[in-house]
Length: 123
Image 1 (tube, rainbow, N blue to C red):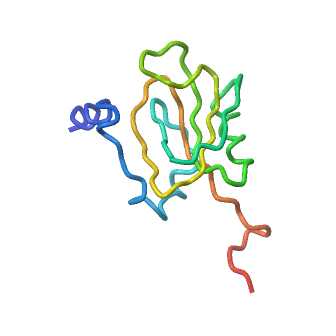
Image 2: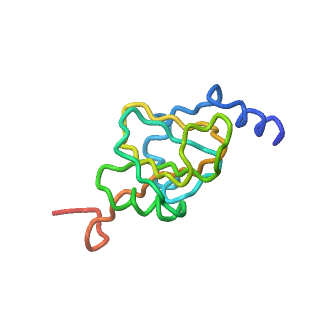
């Protein structure tokens, strides 16, 4: 039941999900904020200090053409968390993207840019 699923999520990095299997399903994930979740890619872009909210971090990622995922340090001095407090980490998409449980952070995926005019087809 739900208790088993929750236990699996809190198992840490052993409970990683390979997001390559979710390719093409990013649209329903984009823009969401997930507490105590980290997205790992092999291509970190850069980090920003003193970012006051997860919304601001998401907006930074959304505004960067290569940003695919972001993680924001929510809690101060969380044991085991390698993320700094109120630091925003921007990440580029890589061949392997992993999602795993990480206490004290908030993460999400950027939404792909909408073509001008809102029409994805081009002549």
